[in-house]
Length: 251
Length: 246
Image 1 (tube, each protein chain N blue to C red):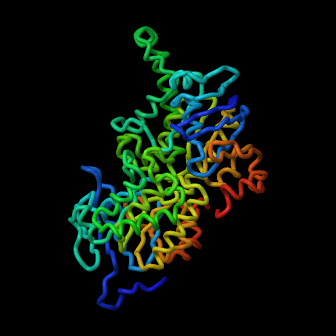
Image 2: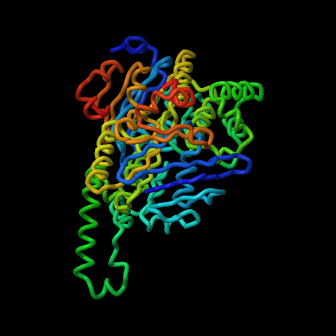
Image 3: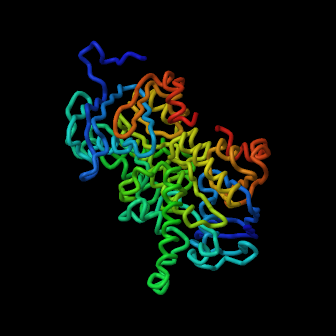
């Protein structure tokens, strides 16, 4: 699904990503862990087109995507969330969700005029999906609230909802559970697992909680000082002496 | 339940919040919330996303002025004091987000945190911060905006401590931190506790937080739902099911 070869990214003299190679297989949930400042979010930023790479190649579904703009990459079916939510604050929660939806036939003026039935059916389908997702994310009661009025944790949940509305093939999640209530975290993991099983979505997740990682990930990559330090199943990673020393010990 | 020091005596707790009503514009978020924290106490506030936990902190700090109720700190009514006045009196606040100045260096951020202190105290405070979080020392001349999310959290916490507060409000200390840094933050909280600083923590990693706390409050829909000793909350099946992931 996603192949990264020798990816490099420098910030001035700092090697944020130092020839990182990794492969995310389709139809799986893959974790990305590592100490703060090890380059995890930078990797997401380069893969999703928000940063330009300084070297290496990125392939998505067999196609080169490095050098493409974020919106072009998103249209190919690779979407991401941010650590800090970026949803438009002056739209309501529901409007935010509808805006994110992938099929917007009504945006084409011709179909808006001549294919009203089809447009309204699509809108209805989008609305149903949005309401289902809001239900899971416990945001239904806040659907008519401005996104800007949501709490920090709720904004995070809304950004998850928006990315699910986009219906991409590969979803990059940057710390989806940080700041989310534990009980809701468990529900979220269920949703992620269901989406993966039922709709064959692939997830690539930055996460600090080993509990979450062990719970849902098939495979884990570990970054340290911008380099890939290890990869394996959650069990293997938790027994890797190097990883224990750099990251987990003290946990 | 640990008996509050102030109960039955004339002494008041360090902070006492009485029936606070607060919110944003016409949106009322807190509908009469009460709580207290003693000096030398750690108190954790848990509750679903959107319960009003961060709003409570913003109201205690004076970013929001309550429509009803009052706030007593060190036996004085501080309900309507501005945030800077509250900092001067010894309350510190580490917000969930945007808790640093991105365009200043790490060191400058810490210096700004100690703005009201003399230069010797500032130097000591900075040395202390670097000893707790070596990652910050390595980056002391880098702009704070270049820090990773987790490193920003460490800086935000260190900056708040520069004022040598007697009460500190910490919103989600472990969000975005790797396991080692989380450990360092919680060790630092325990140290502050030993030094007699009153601490209120909002935390979704509630097990970790309640484990070092004396008491806990559960907020839901802008109201007090439950409060008890931390042990009892951790062992309450209903609370675990509803808020602690079962």
